[in-house]
Length: 200
Length: 183
Image (tube, one colour):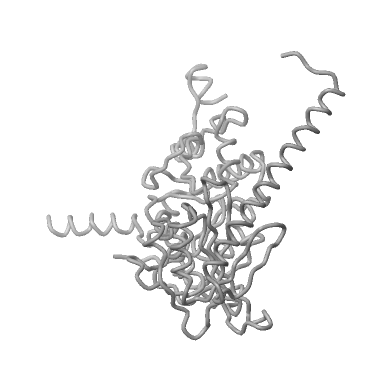
């Protein structure tokens, strides 16, 4: 392979960067349009809408979350569920007194676009319908959310702990769970180096 | 000098105990319990550049029932500790163990609810290796220390202590019973 002079390489890289920027701008535009479509479909039920570094985030009421996700898949082509997760706000998000936020990250493979759907979820009754009937891939992420936050998904066919051992008590990614645990890590039988000699 | 002079160059004199200890310490069969990056260093140590075979410990057994040296390399979590204990209990006596790296020895930087803060709380450990992860040289050094320990160990005594059975007393008792039955 012959190497190009440095000046040419600089030009080629500059062109490449320009093309990448253009393509990113087109993608941002597509994502914005798809988010517009979801907002229009939700109408006055839309809780709020954000764009962080051009990433579209839509907050929906928890009662309409399942419906919105189904709409995103069936009408808007979000055929892949990239992740389901949640976080604990510790009720610090001002006007929204609910404690948890559910997050669904959707991908539209045809249009190369992503969308984040969020929903506030109350601490007292953290239950919502499963998304496994829309995307089969929601199975393990939902189990993980259940494991870490204690959020339950009705209709999930196998809702049990994914990562932590069976019989573990508590949900450790809740912010009020102590970092060093509640003594689980010190609670094992000790295998001694020697046994007491017994003469038969 | 002495017996060797009399027998010629092809003979050496030693004690059976020492001969067995020499054989045992130069043919350790490690059981790797590699759960994190220490396992990568462990693999490097076993492979040609560092070549653990020079110290007779290259036969890595993934079955605890065939090995006599447990190398705990990496983080041990809440869910893994019962597995580790079971593996340790499955290994036949005499057996030794190395706690490799900061995580296995003290939990390392992972001071959280799911990390065991040192496997030596729950299983006996003979040699600790510091480092995150330790270099292969450190692991070789640890194996040399284990070899030293194995060479000095009185095996029957160690097995008696570990199993809680005085085998000599037991044999004598069996003999006595046999004689009594014959008489």
